[in-house]
Length: 413
Ligand SMILES: *Cc1c(COP(=O)(O)O)cnc(C)c1O
Ligand SMILES: [Zn+2]
Image 1 (spheres, helix red, strand yellow):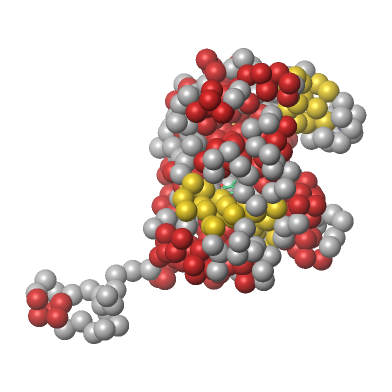
Image 2 (tube, helix red, strand yellow):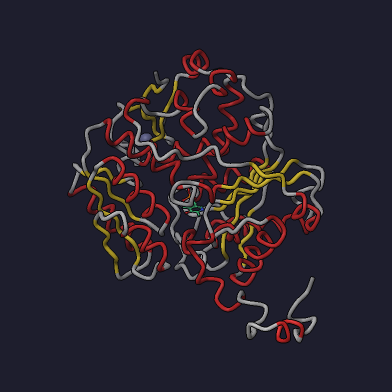
């Protein structure tokens, strides 16, 4: 059962049938899935959700798919970790981390791809395609393999070696493009109109794709005992994830599953080397000016973010903030998280932690708030970003003598 009603234009409200379509014919606004919330309310309860599987399909009735058709790599229901040591370091008494490094292909993209490609199968597509900054490529290739679909994945050629291998191993088509992500994205937008029989997860089936990110709100609320956090910190690439987390809490309020769905403060995290939304926030601009990306946080390196404006509006109206952090701060963020909580995040996680550090220092994230920082990808994918900042404390001969000769700088207990 599903409560999906139609696709609806975010700008003018015109509705469209539930098919592979992403822009409004009249105003070119983006289309979004619209639900009948009375129907959804009748389909779900805290008990029915608790009885569901230990992955994001426990919220299947709240997603725009029919369960029998899902491509299942068991994404989601990742741990919500109480971060006492990091919280102490930052002066935060109620800090939690949503550890989405623990997804089937190591990033939150499994949530969105699982919905997009399940829907694509349902709509009769046999080919999955996407433009990717890396994590989407991994996830599309894996889900297509699982479903026996063909895949055509486009990436900028300078991606991290691990992200390339983690896509290529699934043996679909991987096309490295000599250009930036924004160039790749433009190419895919052109291709999508030439190949209407391909499901481009971030073009023609994007309305379904982005809905998957709502599960990041559903899970956090359930894991907190059916309440919303006071403040969330979310990385921004296209801005889709941030807008859908906000929407997810609002919907839980509509459904009566939580009481405080509209009080969540939403803050955003970007790298300064690709921070068009952070810059617009800081300068109070009324539009997002595209930038040329230059940062180690490649998974967030979208210079012209499709949902940037919507993300900015949510941050402003919810009382959050956005920071653009430097690459050295990103590395420090990765290492701080690893050292204090035992979680190894990719560069996007470093961006989020570095932003959290700034927001806590400025008092924008407050000591007594229940804060959730979203850690969206695994550090195994971006090991090279750490460079020579990590390595053995010492290298010795295999003798007791050599060990005992180590200085207090080399061994620090
Ligand atoms: C894609 C991605 C994001 C941001 O996603 P958007 O929805 O495009 O803003 C965040 N973290 C990681 C690790 C990603 O791969
Ligand atoms: Zn419209």
